[in-house]
Image 1 (cartoon, rainbow, N blue to C red):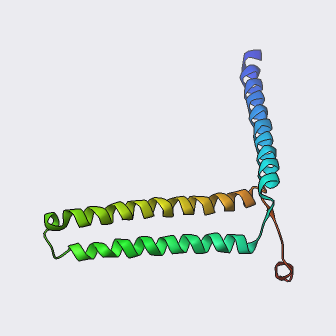
Image 2: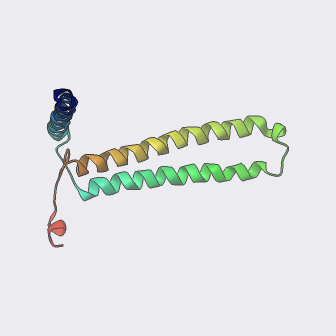
Image 3: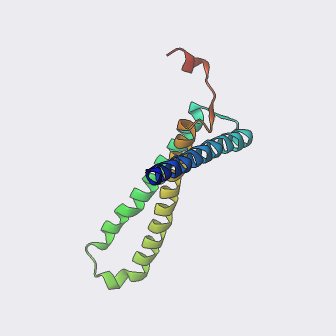
Length: 125
């Protein structure tokens, strides 16, 4: 009978350990992020969102240039196409990183790592 209680006891210990670890991580993130970054406001989020939109636009602008190669033999313009594809890859990487950054900001606010600075217009809702 005691053998059946032991695994439950161990499971409970593991659960408690990870719960305490999660709390420590949350508090450490909150402390470090807030002391380094201070507060964030709507304008900060909007500015990052605008930057992401600009990179997305640039990416699509470059992607659409691929149409220029539709009517030509691929090998005849391989150097030009390669240059475009290199630019496209660089911009895609920047776009993906920008989205990841925005998502990380959102996560930090949701987890209460980042403090939100309210403005007078925020409090009227």
